[in-house]
Amino acid sequence: MANRTNFGEPTMGAYRLKEMHDAQFPGGVVVDPTPITAGQEVVVFYNGLLAQSGAQEVYLHCGFGRDDHWHGIQDLRMARTGYGFVKSVTMPDTHTQFNFCFHDNAMNWDNNAGKDWSFQVHNGTMNGH
Image (tube, rainbow, N blue to C red; front, side, top):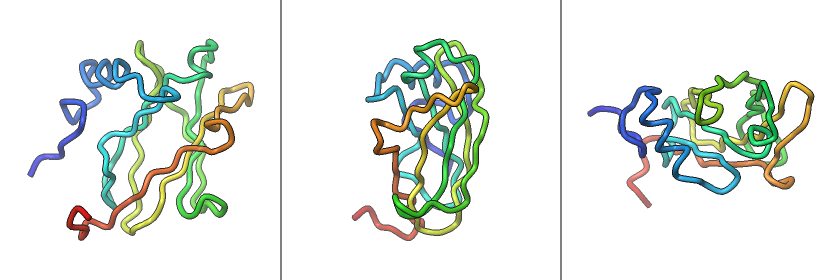
């Protein structure tokens, strides 16, 4: 079974990036594919406040676990494209929560008005419920 995404091709092609950009998700953030399965590589697309303010570099600040207790925290430099910033992240092999926000090279933050962004990571044995 091929890796399916919500935005066309599984590669980081311009068509997929354009689709993510044109979706105009709240805050300029798209995670693809969703729902997220453990062990899967997901793409985080960002065209939010920092990008619109002219940031030259944007970093994905991410971790796993509960909202108030992240672990495995990383700052990952995102790739700048004509549509926004993108970064691929491989999910852990367990059911957890993927939490993230963004900052630029001047340490200006976009944390979704203090709420960050959070997505459930399902362990692959879920049957859709």
